[in-house]
Length: 116
Image 1 (cartoon, rainbow, N blue to C red):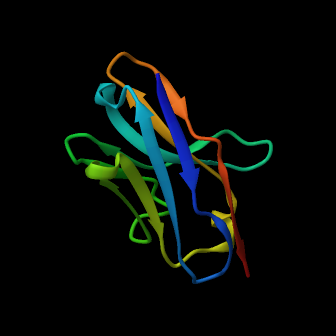
Image 2: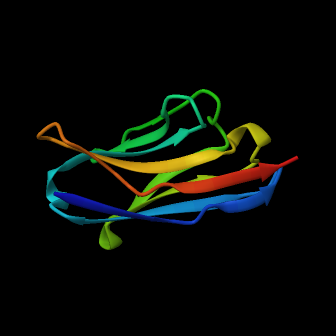
């Protein structure tokens, strides 16, 4: 089992920045990928950014050059730094951990609202 606790998020004006944090606990040695997803009401959850234990990253085209995913291994925490935010980035953001056993774990979700 992996337990994820998110923090960060909130309301920001367009062009501003926010940082989301996701602290992992439990069987963290089983994690091989961590990432961030977002979801709008009535829509499917979509990948925003992912980070493998090997350090490779993957970003949605819509956030490339604006968002950065990184981790602090000593704190078992990964982050999503979001710069140059746009109103269309407004969504509930979820952190995710995928294990080598094929399990997926999710954080509780945090609202990000970008005003125009």
